[in-house]
Image 1 (cartoon, rainbow, N blue to C red):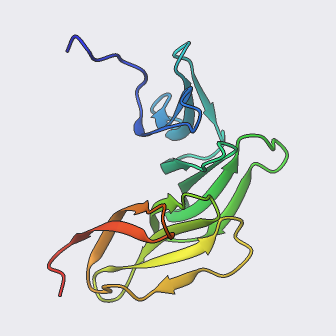
Image 2: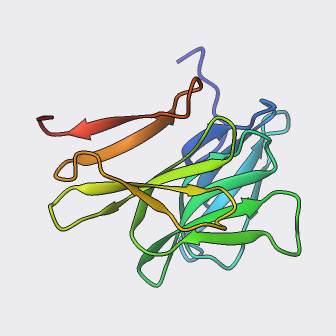
Length: 168
């Protein structure tokens, strides 16, 4: 429409905390697979980063704009990672390996939530500190249902989420 502006070809767009760029998952060409990309909203330039990873998914900014949370797919596993936007020597920290989906960062940037499938046909919510220095804690919430689309509430670090199925 008249009010729409094309920015970039990508998925999972997320505004940067300063509002000057977008974080997206983009495909530069068919042989390279998907990459994290940063879109400068003034110039429209897309800068891919994390070269060498064949696929990246579900990206989120940390509130300070210095790190990004995402799911990297490698060797068939969905690994939860953080990516530094400022530390070129150690840009990637793996927080949790295997079958991770729907990552979310707390309002204060200290916690990360995600889900992993379980034997009940649903998924389990996990919370881990954003630096990955302590083991993840599993929350015992509606184990037989699929939970997704997480949003941290500002007041007391509670998590709001969408549920597939009838809540008992």
